[in-house]
Length: 83
Length: 157
Image (cartoon, rainbow over all chains, first blue to last red):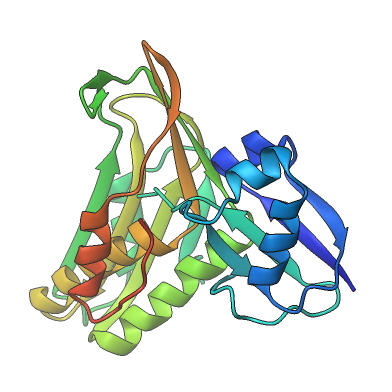
């Protein structure tokens, strides 16, 4: 399936793009993260396990067990620091 | 009806916002407002400016649902949240939360609840300019603890 992936803040800077369309077989947000890590390079470094990475699914805070759907929007970002 | 949540680059006027919030509402006996501003130092470094990034669409929805939750938890009448984005400098205003209620306790608590919630669950990110270069601000564990006081165990930092 095709999903829309978005990156914000330090992760956006590290991977050098704000978003991309990804063709994936991943069933969950966490599996998608693993697929992106497997690319190596900046993706592996900025999304690495053990790093504080927060995720949103269709613009709601999510956890990695949540399932992906066709054309869903998955965002990866560092802990938020507004206010 | 006036928007409850605004994400904007422009500055805001607290007096105007409060006047609009309580206009024609004779039930209101308390207004509580919080304004957050840019400090000129952070973790021992001088900050010359700050860039605020957000997640267009999600940020507005996230704060709007926090306002809904505040209405469920507290006996309040009206809420206004403004958060600025883009380039800000020391002394600039960043964020405003204003709440009206009949009695002070409800608007005090709702205002603090909304700020605690916003700090840890609304997608904003700050990048500071310091003499050593630019750096992304780290989330604080203490902010998660502040949210936990309200019975919400959602980890951010």
